[in-house]
Length: 320
Image (cartoon, rainbow, N blue to C red; front, top):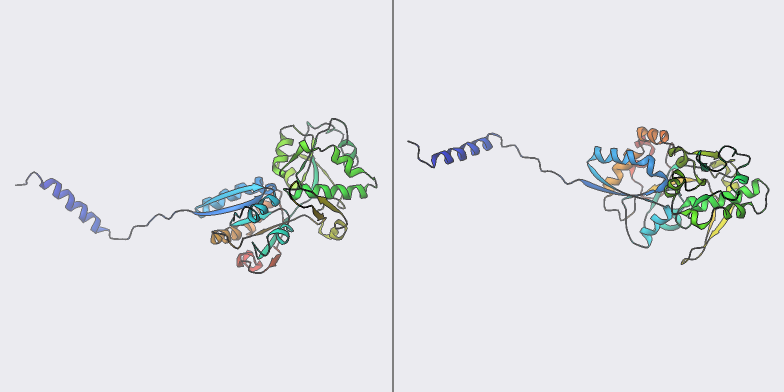
C-alpha cells in the first residue's frame, strides 16, 4: 500500500532517472563579445548593413561611434578612450596623431573625391553645370554648406579643393568668394551631418565626398581631376596647395593637398583585438568589398600597410 508521501518520492525518483539517462554536459551560454568601432562619418550609411550582418553572424555586440576623423583621433589622444578598431577618412591622421603612441601600423582601404552636391530643390539646380558652378555658388541667397576643418578631413579638403580651383580657373580671390557664401552657420561637424541638412532642404549646395552624394541619392557636379583630390597620379600637383587652420584653443595646423585615401588600424590598447581581427577578415573579404563598391565606396584592391605589427588578416594571401 502506497503511503501519502510515496507519490512525491516517485516523482523525485523519476526525475533523477531522467537526469541519469542523459549525462551529457550541458552547454553554458557564452556572453556575446563586443567590438567598439570609431567610424568616419562618410562611411556610416554604407557600413551599417555590414556591421549588422557581422554582429548577427558572429553573435557579437558592435558599438559604433560615427563622426569626424580628427574628432575620433582626439577622443583617443586627449580623452584616453580606446576603440577596438578605427576607420578614418584620411590616412595622414595616423602618422600625425596616433602613431606610434596609440597604434603601430595603419592600412589604406578606400579612395574618394570631392564634389559639389545638390538636390532638385536647390536654387539654380536646373542650370548649374561643371562649367558654371563657381558662379552659381556665389549668388546672393544661395545657401552653401561645408564641413568643419577642425573636426573632419572633408572640412580641410574643401579648403584645399577651393585653393586648387582658384588656380585652375585662373581667378584670383575665387576661394575667398566661395567661402563667403558658406558662412559659419552652414558649417557642420562631419560629412553625414552636412548631408542631412541638404536632404532636409536647409542648404542648396554642399562641398562633399562623391560617395556620400551617391549614397544619399544627391545630384552632384563632378569636378576636374586637377582639383577634386581624387586622382592618385596627381599627388604632386595636389601637394602644391596648402591651407592653415586655426582652432579657438589650439595652435594652427597646416594641411597639404593629397589624394583622398581612407585608412584603418587596431589601437595598441584595444580591449577586444580578437574581435577586431575577425572583423578585418570579414571587412576585407571579396564579398564585403564588392558590397561596399556597390554602396559607392571606392575600395582599394589590396590594402597598403604602413608600420609594424599588422595582423595577418590584412595580408594579401588571406584576402583571396
